[in-house]
Image (cartoon, protein in one colour):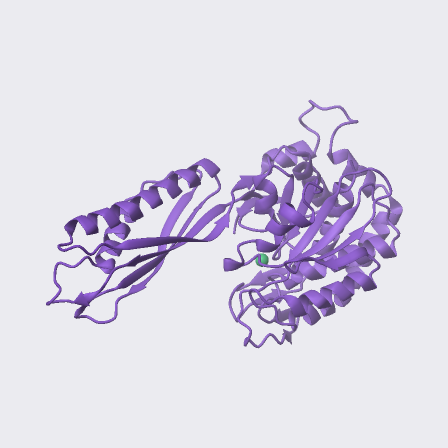
Length: 420
Ligand SMILES: [Zn+2]
C-alpha cells in the first residue's frame, strides 16, 4: 500500500476554503462531536480498555479462517455481536456475519466492516505469540485487527449509550483475500443489503491511513489445448506451449499509462509433459490492475486480442488438420473506483484525525471498499491502528504501541458518518 498526504484535504478540514457556510461544512459535524463530554469520555475509555480489545484480537486470530472456510471464525463473531446486543444478528448465504444497531433518527445507513478470511491454508498454525508489545501470528494484523476494532466500536457505542442518527450495520465479510475475489462484499451489495447502503467503511490492516482510491484488477487463467504428440515424429503439429509463448510475447509488448498506474503481469506458466513431446496443454495466470476503469477495460481488451491472435498464429503455422483451442477463465474481478477527496466523508475523516491529533493520509488499495466505490457509494478503507508487519506471511506481526488510536478513530468516524 502506498500512502500520500493530501494537503488539500487538511486545508478543507481546517475550514480555509471559505466557500461553504458554517452550517453546511461537513467537518462541523465532527466539531460538534468533539464538544460532547460524553463522547470524549468514551474516547478516553477506549484507550484504557485497549488491552481487553487486544485479548479479543488474539482470540479471534487463533480461530483458523482459511480461504473459503471462514465458518468457525464467523461463528465466534456472530456470538460476539449477540453478546454486545446488536439486533438482527445473522449469517448470510455466503457466510458474512451481520448485526445492526438501530439509529435514533432518519440518518444514513452506515455499513462498517472487517474481513474474516486470511490467506493461510487450513493446516497453518495460527497460535499467537507475544513478545513485549508485539504479537506474532498469521492474520494478527490482516485482518484480526479490523475485527477487533469493530467490536471495540460496538462496545463503545453500547456502553456509552451513544445514539446515532442513522443505523449502523456491522459486518464480518468473507472472501476479501486473493481468489476470494471480494465475494462477501459483492454479495452484500448485490443481495443481502442491496440498495440499503449509504456509506461504507472497511477496517483493513493497521496504521492510521485511509484508502479512497480502489485499484481494480482482472485476473485470468488461460489454457491452450491440442492433441499433443512426439517432438520428432509429429513435428509440425500445433503446440499449446508455442501458442503460449506467442501470447506472452504480445502481452510483454503492451503499452499502458503511467498515470493512472496501470499494470500487467504473467505470474505463473505451466504445461507440457516432457522435453521430447509436443505438449497437449499449456497455461498461464495473468494479473492486470488499474485505478482507472477505462484504462483497465482497454488493457483487458488488449489481453483478449493477444490470446486470440496467438491462437490464430499457431493454428496457421501448424501442418495437418489439428487445431488448438483456448479457454480463458476469469479468476479475479475487482472493479476500480474512488471516493473523491472533496466528498463529505473524506472531509469528516480528516476532521476526525485532526480531533485525535493524528496525521491523515490518503492512499490507494484493493479492498472490500472497491465494490462500494465502483458503484459510487461513499466509502473508505481505514487502518485499525498499531503497526502491522509482514502481512500475508507466516512472520506476520502486530505492534500494539498506541494501537488505541485506531479504535478511537474508528469510533469517532462511525459517529461522524452516521450523522446526516
Ligand atoms: Zn486485509
